[in-house]
Image (cartoon, rainbow, N blue to C red; front, side, top):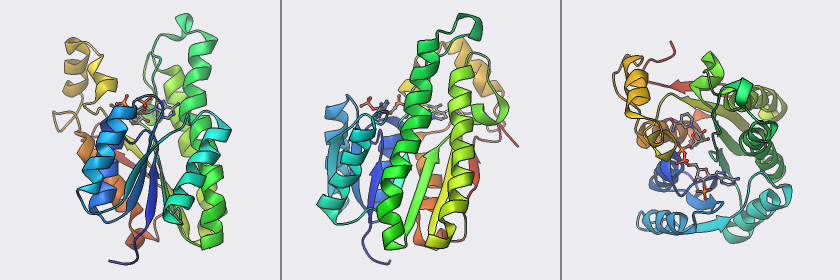
Length: 246
Ligand code: NAP
């Protein structure tokens, strides 16, 4: 393995983010685990990462706020002297049919999922450009690719992430920075545990693999794109959906 690198995982203490933090730590990267409100989960994940032999710190920041994003990147640089990998994982849902969706529910999802990813990319890409190295991976969703009733806000935010990924990949390729997205299907986390058994069964019936993804299924794909060796893959959307979208 090459030199020790440092990663930021937004929303890295829980669900998919937790699995990504552990994967990157297992691959030998130091990690900053960001959280908004779930401090305990983030501290616990940091402790699990340290057991894998790397340094790990939890850091509070709301990705929808520009100052918080700048502080998060600065913390990583101060703590580890570098920032090599950014994973935009933080995300929320405010589902509902559009006729009943409030402007606030629309904007809140856009602010966290899309503007949050923009702010983090903007803050992290500056030191990455100076270092001539970077891996930026954002978690999108199959909702962005197929649309999903009840998710006008969420699908728009996740499709926006794809457009941003493709554009930034073109801007940063000459600096040896790759920018990719992972589009999960249905993953068994708190986000999907709120759905009724009936809705979950209907979802599983549409998946050729006939099961939901584990957070580790998604983390594996992120770990792949975060490696030094995947330096020639950029601007791509890797769909990890058990065949839901083919
Ligand atoms: P989750 O268990 O609800 O976790 C969401 C994470 O995002 C939490 O760690 C949360 O931290 C963080 N977060 C939310 N708002 C934030 C903010 N403003 N600033 C910083 N962190 C914030 O959901 P998950 O299923 O693991 O989802 C992770 C990502 O995968 C999301 O982007 C989601 O859209 C995407 N995804 C999920 C599925 C699925 O089926 N579960 C499918 C496709 C894509 P706090 O608890 O501290 O707020």
